[in-house]
Length: 468
Image (cartoon, rainbow, N blue to C red; front, side, top):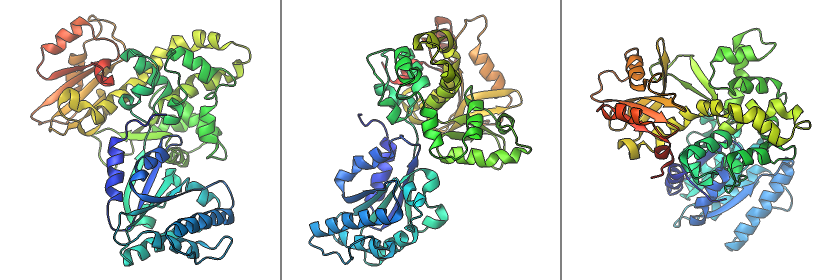
């Protein structure tokens, strides 16, 4: 699959690797999100060695790493000081220091799937940090890149003072994913992203030459479809008792929810605090995201939670409940009777995410600058799914319309004005911009309404997709 997006992540990774001081770099994120592909993209520019940990015992891991290191040393005319077999990490890792000469470009050691080292109870971390200490003492430009899920990474306390960069690789935003989605019209691309999201491993399965509906039938509904159990594959590998995790995620399948909603969704919990470990684990796995209202205090516990990528929300909302019916219903019937009638409502829940992504990454094309701070606002009398501060200093407030019924029932700018009066966020800014996002082509009445206001902008699906 083509490598797309990740411009910011690539720049940060290269900047860290170009430093002469030996360091540790963490690359974490959701499974299938492109962590390895990101690192592989820059490795041709550096002398490097990659050890991809296998799901094998620790002594096998060490034996494999020993052979890999011996081969790399031999290629540089260096003899290995190790005996045959699986030497301990305290003897094995120091062999890497000599691979980084003093007066050359940095040498990079990549440890991929680092969670498997922890699962094998490998005692690699302290020897690894000692390796970086030795490299600094000898003035060797050596960098160690760890790739894996966030829960398997050394903590900030463990990694300091060796840590140079932490990259959390999220699913691709809508604009970056567009070239991998089926459909040519912007409205079709929004529909496709609302179903299949931005995880590169998922996007690689799509057939761009057929419709979104055909992709749904082929990839998600059919019993032997490659994505028919995507939620289970992403979740059940990493948790021992998935039932409560499924309950939490299912509560979010229809849109954002607060803490109390998730607690109520899990049977058998007597106190709201008991749901905390499950939420934390889902966040570590990259399946759950949390955000607080931009005008809330930093210590507030009032947050909204959401499923991190649309494909999981779609699977939990439509595919998981229908799995028992698949043997009795043709994929075409399930799509036409259950999914298609409710698909627009599902898209409406995802659309604000696409709008927030636009403000973070691509608003420079529509407003002249991207968001310096972005998110949502909610409270007594207001609920704005898109809000923030641009790098220009202007505050922005956005309403997202997946569908517009008509001028008699929709007054977007008046609604924005009313809600803005209820929050102090952005008050006193020299410029405060009202944004109206639309998934469909905006009707003439809305275009005229926005054109009459100097403080309003209209952003439609074409702008979101970067087409035209």
